Length: 330
Ligand SMILES: NC(=O)c1ccc[n+]([C@@H]2O[C@H](COP(=O)([O-])OP(=O)(O)OC[C@H]3O[C@@H](n4cnc5c(N)ncnc54)[C@H](OP(=O)(O)O)[C@@H]3O)[C@@H](O)[C@H]2O)c1
Image 1 (cartoon, helix red, strand yellow):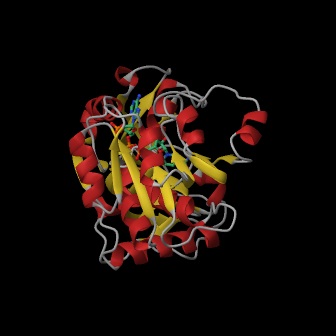
Image 2: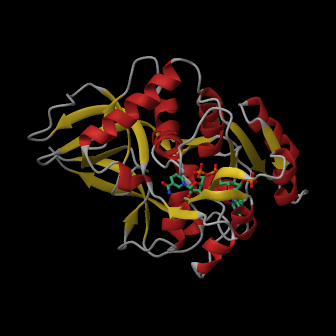
């Protein structure tokens, strides 16, 4: 049975004005697929990279990587979901900006009853990212309670989850953010120290906070603007986890600088390398559901937009006007 849905599509890369709300036909799920009717859709910075063409994908492109809703049909071979289940996901391919879609079931998880649809849509991509950053990218000798880590854009969607989770793990997270109000938000959510990197040079401040030693790990999703100084914030053998480019991509660099800075390590990570199997997706999601269910991590849905105002949502995200998570409501 085919049904119609509204969907946000781009026909060419560019600014927010390229996003058009169109009507599409949605069919039945095939083998390994589900059809899900969204109650809330997550907004992520990766949507901006895909819209602008920084991450080039075939066109026309329906955007969106995160959502929550009710499963209304399952395809052959899908055993972990049934019609009527509450569910949430972070998943490829893009296409979450819509009322209803057919998609691979592998990354779709049943949503516990104590987590709302809005929270589900606000936490799967961002929370699973915080999960792998803190638990699946260990530096040499691991991350131990009391260790210092530096987390840029700490008041953002991934940032506020990471601040709380790092505190629960006993880490001393130094959070950077672009205003004093954002810094206070990061502190209220568990950052041990905060730095407004628009008004203060974060490198000497990190050195001061750590007694000159530097941090074991830097989590850097800002990219171009923070890259060089972030490497200098690391202690010897420290780990730079690059996972985004909100300010622009990092230019090429010579590996020899890693030796000069204390035999440091650099990795560029993406969530989608971590969730390539149903089992791994579910175990990471279970960890996330547990930390949210226990109240140690609260999901801050700070902005809500009707789906038809998606252009404004993108403008606000890119203008650094948002904090925490943002959802689009179908
Ligand atoms: N690789 C992965 O697996 C993965 C997964 C999820 C997210 N990410 C990345 O993690 C980052 C956070 O994602 P999110 O969706 O939660 O976004 P977000 O943190 O809510 O928003 C991005 C933040 O980046 C900061 N920023 C610094 N320079 C900026 C600039 N020139 N333009 C715009 N923003 C700038 C802003 O905070 P301040 O004003 O405080 O600086 C802004 O609020 C993004 O870079 C995203 O691509 C990567």
